[in-house]
Every structure is written in structure tokens, then in C-alpha cells.
Image (spheres, rainbow, N blue to C red):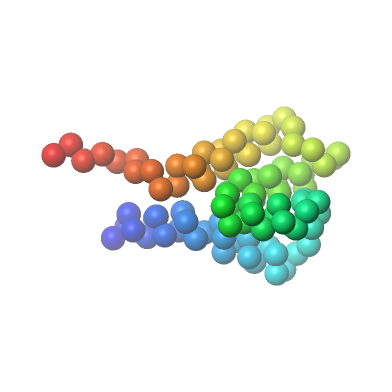
Length: 91
């Protein structure tokens, strides 16, 4: 049951967080030039979209650099391996 809850939070967690950020702040507009890119990121790569938004908003010149690149890469890994199983059945 805990594995199911973990998978549920992994899939819906960033989308719920992104929806709250969209409704309560103007960060999506500050981080993304195009609303289409923000919507595509929200639908297909939510962890990457949130990581990119954090990286852009916390940089002085609006680019992704330094340690923020690692956060964006981690977001990509979470998005691509979100449905991968970390445990194996050796029966």
C-alpha cells in the first residue's frame, strides 16, 4: 500500500504543486517566455518544469547555471524514471 501511495505522490505531486504555484503566484510567467512551453512542461515533464522555474527565478540574470543545472538534471531524471521500478522481484 505504501508503494502505491509513493507512486501516486510521484506522479501527481509536482502537478498539484505546479497548479498551486500557478494560482497563487506569477512565477510561471516570470520563468517562461511562452505559455505553450509552460503548459507542455506542466503536462509532460512536471519535475523538470518546476526545477527549471526554480533555477531561473533564483539566478541573477535569468539563466540556468552553476548548481541549478544539477537540479534541472535531477528533475529530468525524476520525470523519465517516474514509472520505473526501483525494486526488483528475484523470485
